[in-house]
Image (cartoon, rainbow, N blue to C red; front, side):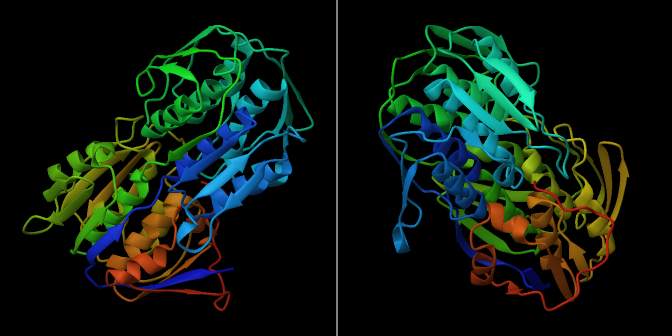
Length: 436
């Protein structure tokens, strides 16, 4: 099992190019199931979750053609015939977003059998919102042997209000509604940029969608969709992670090929903390403005609020800020597992339910730490970059799920980081590994 070995103390300086958004690419790939024509996607990140999704689609009969070399960020998907309308447990357990195939399969074939995803290190991710939305469209849902079976001769448009905001729930029901008969009105929808990006792709495929990016989305169902070409939006979480990496090391990083409009909540917090944030076109730069950053409270929220996927990285930054920062997590009930590992490195963090109280600045020192999920892994990388000495981060397969060539990008801006095989005994911890 690979590990990252990081020697801290170097201020990161330079430019980092941001790749495509994993969380936009995954539903876009699932959307290929809605048509027999080819769907070509550009700016696809080369990460493990994308590879898992390709394997999943191939088990259903989808022909996939991924580029190589410079074209490795482009993939063509053609579901001319769906031979197997099922998402098996072996694939769903490694990536919860696999459940996004439920709506497209049901709309296209009238049947879908998808494994329940189960629990997660950062909290339960039930798909009840997906199921209730599909039932509102006329599907019959049953559950047996750990699988959800959805059936419908033809979905019918309906009005449905999500009980809670759900990104994947919004995306799943939206895709199903494109082929439903009549009009569908979805309320209390997720407003994330990834939802808007999916709607843009579906529109190119012939779907009639209005209101994506707002709480209410209206869909006029069509009889069939056709192929299309689409470029995936930049990854706002990767962009935010690198900006925070520059700040925690006292460096000066500029990120390019990003979408600054998607990072407004992060920029607001950084400016409150005393950082200088500059934006120009598709670039952003953040530097500490003369002195140590100030501790600043933060609460995660659905977009356009502060992204839960940047909470762990922000907590790492606050260990180096002056004062006490209160961080409140409202999206997932168990997303502070990284705090225990940060404390092992010398941080002073106290957990009180869904609140984390961070006292800074703390002198961090290298240690052997364990990654529990994708974004927790990123927070440990940031802490290691700022720590004195060498840090060994185990279970970095979590990082590989969502960050492409992370260590290469870090080395290019001055970090001392290398990937090693299973040469060092893993630390004995009580924290359980699971997907994030």
